Length: 118
Image 1: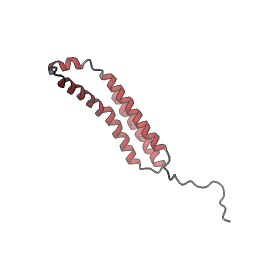
Image 2: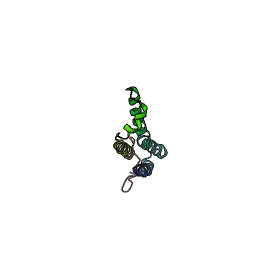
Image 3: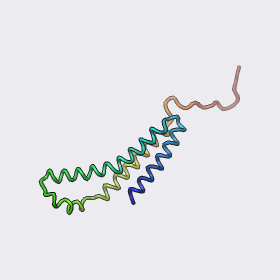
Image 4: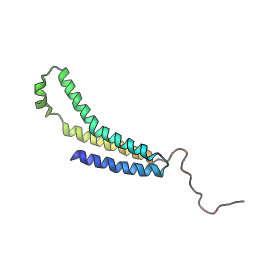
């Protein structure tokens, strides 16, 4: 349920990143794909790598593999999941914040008021 919430939030952020990027004359497709990729990496890949790291540590310390499943239940898996979800949300929020900034050259704005042709 937690990961479903995370994926929904990623796609909502991706929609707003695309919309904001187009408004600020940036590449909407690039920033959208970057947002989805960063969210996916933090929510799926990083937790898997953390658990694989625990398993490697377990094997390198010489503990028997038969006890790994029993002791793996003591791993703080929900803490790892929630932590990665928080980092994912933080990362996509930072991407949205960056995209919301106007480019250095700025977007050309129409002058307000009547034109002075003198």
